[in-house]
Amino acid sequence: MEVYMTKNAPITRHLIPEDQRLSATADLFGTFFPLRLEPVIYGITDRMAEDYHGGYWLYYLLENGGFYMAPNWEQHFSAKSLNGWQGELSADALGIIVCLTAYSHLSFGGPEPFARTCAEQYHLLREYMCEHPELGEILGAID
Image (tube, rainbow, N blue to C red; front, side, top):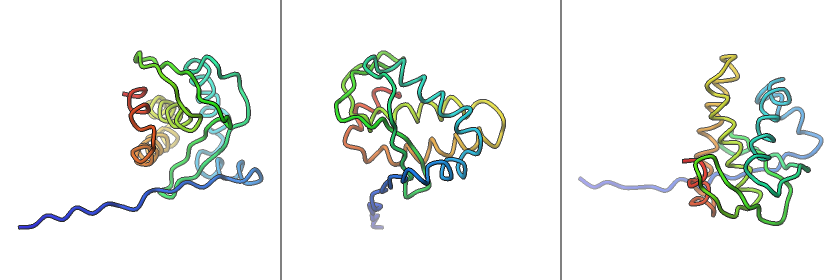
């Protein structure tokens, strides 16, 4: 018996244009995006990256239905996670880490539809993360 392994096509991301950000996040998270998810993401980032001081974030939709956001920052961030991992991260990798952390945290609370959405988004983003060039750093920070 022969076993064939096939590699799935990479998951692509698409930058959400400025004029579509509100509708895209409302479609995914409803009013919970500005009221619950966004503040948690910013809070985690503030605690994790000492050199983060706010700023504009880029929003991405993933081909698999996932969503994440990342600071619009060219330099790397010096970061430290709660598990003791520390290192340098691109803004994109930092965004993935804080979104994964926020999704995980919020998936354990109510209300149920929002918690379920966060759990789904966690798995969709984790699938995309597996193809990221900073996979080792991301895993170190979240595991």
